[in-house]
Image 1: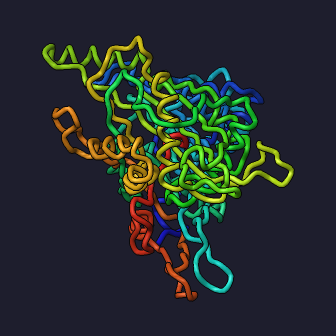
Image 2: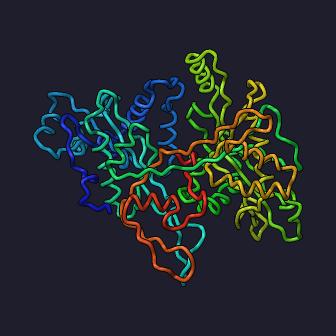
Length: 514
């Protein structure tokens, strides 16, 4: 159980030669935006450092962090914690040395840190809190039982943990994380902290109470560059961020279907859809493709479901693949390591995918839809076919070199094999999807080649409980609630134990990555 007495939330721990400040302190002291730009420069410099065995093109660019700052409606300078290297012999260093609890907030408030003195070199380390809400616990119904979908709980998503190479090994990241934890506890309503850790940093986070949350993955595998097998299908099209209908359909599907997946983030703010989900991305490592299947009659996807009162079906998906720059860099690195090695088939990733039933509003406004639930298996498979058929030529243009086999991976909950298998019975022309999922699970592909390796789980997600949670027990009848009082129990909750989450019912979406 975590509380204010926990040493891992000490906001006053000192590190000799450094002072601690929030970005808000510096902005208020300078009345300028220079500190924010210096913070972004710091992130670009730290994460742009060459890594052994990885081409420079694989490093996150500054533009990614700029997007995360400027496009996040919840961005708050008070949630950015910085360690400032104090110049030896300076008045600030002398004042800091005289008191174990001196922080940069005092000197920043007095204007001692001028914008001109805040250079990339003076920011030694950083930690940022991203304000999010996580679908985690089932919501209680009046009179007992559980509602579906689970309720969202407020969390602090920890990101931008970055220490300049010359300042590592001094405890700065730990000190900043403790300050971030203290702020989350002081807020009084944040239930947990989550983060996506670099492999080398996982022991640090574990020592601060974080526990690992592997996210299972699943894939379909098939050959390119030929088009997908023909099917009686409707056509998807690129999702236009400036089209009200496209974003309205995507938001309606996500609001109803994503909460059923524990570990997904809520998106109640329309600005988040416009500025984060649909905005152009500054990450030059990825080529992102967004596609949408506008509302169509259910019978267009599942002829067996034709009826006068049949609902509409709509779908959307967000894919990514390595950018041409990164793909070329990876190929060059592979060739340099082993000139005889064959070029590996590129992977595409499904960041998110939802197919649902819609009811238009009473006025017939097609842009004001209400999603009533997931689409039946045949409609799901037909919509997936249409989305892939639209997205793949954009992800892998015809001019690209042919690849022997393409694996399209996704968080396991959004690519259910049972739905694909059921669709194969209802729509024989879509049976190839079930085979593609089978092949990507490690079976021999249809051409008798080597087995396709199934995608590994993303083992870098971690979570830490900030305060106890009360979770209603599964089932009806008002059974006693379960109290989650440790990070271990929180990890078990997300994994389906002890509250009985459905199979594969856990997964973060890359679109929300911070």
